[in-house]
Image 1 (cartoon, protein in one colour):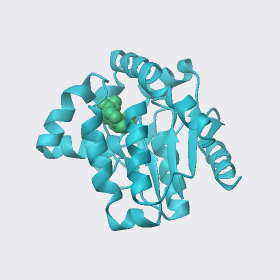
Image 2: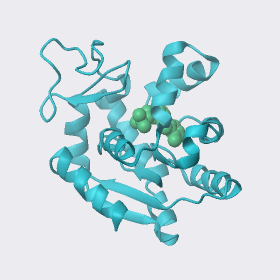
Image 3: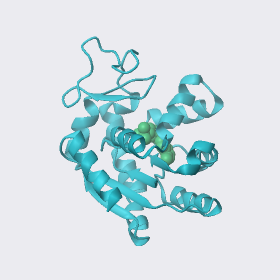
Image 4: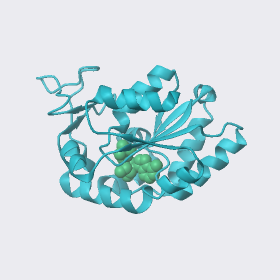
Length: 214
Ligand code: AMP
């Protein structure tokens, strides 16, 4: 599998990417997770990324393209990968095409999880995230354990700074302006499949899996 999972913030990309990647035994490569880890570790990359992330803006293309180039060169990505949250701009998509052409392993699938804007705001405001392992929860649809700690690793759950309501609005605007044009970019290449992202997590997973098989 060499696939990209796209969708607006809160579409369930992270949750679905975990299932799909596990199922296909390929790494889930999420630029958001890589950047958050760098931020927590206080590395130069993390410091540069922080101000963009906290206000819901995109980290500059050159930075994330560099990250992806390094990550795709790691041995586990040779057998395939699922990209989650990258590309987010047309220049990123063009850079990815160039990288994969160099590796003689072009993209096979681009899945877009489609969710209307009202549902997104509701989803993001109820989201709680494990800062250690990245596992997401939702106060309504996937409630965290009663002690407020991650069921997988026991770390105390948090609301991500970029899930605050004002930041969510900014992220939606950025998505509409910078990321939505990728829909046409990948449709023109015949790679795009749009999947309805409403409904139970398992239903959406099943739709995505059917699209990958089909
Ligand atoms: P995510 O977890 O995918 O929602 O990403 C969280 C934040 O990381 C985004 O709001 C951006 O600030 C930054 N980010 C993640 N992936 C990218 C990307 N491909 N291009 C630019 N910024 C990114």
